[in-house]
Length: 160
Image (cartoon, rainbow, N blue to C red):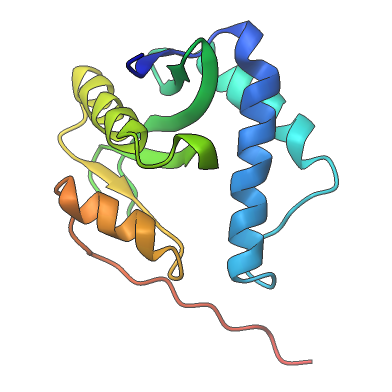
């Protein structure tokens, strides 16, 4: 059965919370000093993504279904001019997650391309994203889909 990409709905909240928490934990595993994982990370993602899904002119929350089960999500939003980042109005792809069992099925590509289409429809002249430095698989996917490196974030802990 093919993967279906659709807007998230209220009944997807448990899956969104679980997958958002998995994404946060993955990043925390890459660099625990840079990426936080609050105690309530799953309920926090459930609340945040549910709230954002109800703002369709500003935010986009998509889910991927395979055999009737939600196996991935993508979250992006329209962003205004950002003088700190030297960015004009743009779309931002903030999160993308595909469950382990659905990886290799093209689900990530379908989610990312659907996000670009939706943000473009909302008026984004470009879509910007960030990936964890250690997430080489995501970087390969995004490069294949046409993104190019433009910035490198660096972190330094404050001295004791």
